[in-house]
Image (cartoon, rainbow, N blue to C red; front, side, top):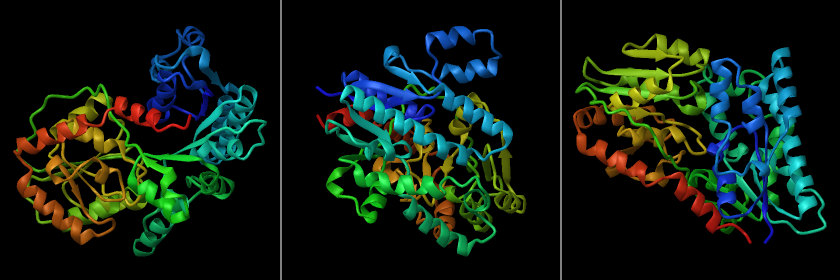
Length: 402
């Protein structure tokens, strides 16, 4: 039985794809960057707590250590470029190729198949082999042309918004990286997508719908804070404060909505675009938080009436599942994973992407029915419990090409 080479940077999807391959004895090699092998843990034992905390999540016991290869030179070069001042997105677009080339060389040497994420697939998928490997793609972002069309349309309506996508060299996709992601699906025998929205973006680009499967992500072992939300209407947003997340639409809807006086919108954002930050500063009953710990974040979910993130484009949106797991109903758009997770009876509410009037009406309506509604919080928890990483891994392995 031919096995699979998997490659990506970081701890993409909590390592669940290589874990799934290992569980089914289908993993040949997992190629990654910084990974906490026993030797690395020993070497960094005396490092400061920040380094050790980062290291703690950079491994998974489900992946055999002898199946892991780390591209340390790539990692060191990335850090050096960051220190010099190169834009991270440009650095990653260069190093992504190295993961793909390494996967191609390994597959050729061991006559293995390829299971690659979209950023790391093109070179491996288009290499020449003396065998015919299965080329399996995980498309974790919607197709970039689809994404750009949506964001450019919104940018016309809100020209002061969009800094993180259009305003500088930090754009996620540009030049060669854009081409690589747009082309790789054309060479795949099978494509996994985490949401129907992502799948539809590929089909619109021309992908064969029979080759595109939807396997939603999961959540597992979530530590839940047992807090009783207040009777007032407390709304929470967690994520990057940029255009793609629809935060400007949420702010405008909050500004327009007729809500009880004690209502509050909390924004937990590691980064916040300047245009959106200026907009938020003009609107009352908004609190902005940065540097929130994991425990503080759990408390925020547990004590909020509603989690709201009306994204314009979302490959999945793991934070929705995190909120639901804490019993916090969610408000988003169809351009996310939410239609794949459930409906209003599950604590999942939708508004059309970019429609501030509809979003305003939905917020006003939810302010009346959610505070003190224990049944919908229970339904939210039950909904999240249906989507586990174990289920994700099983679905991936059950549909793999042999």
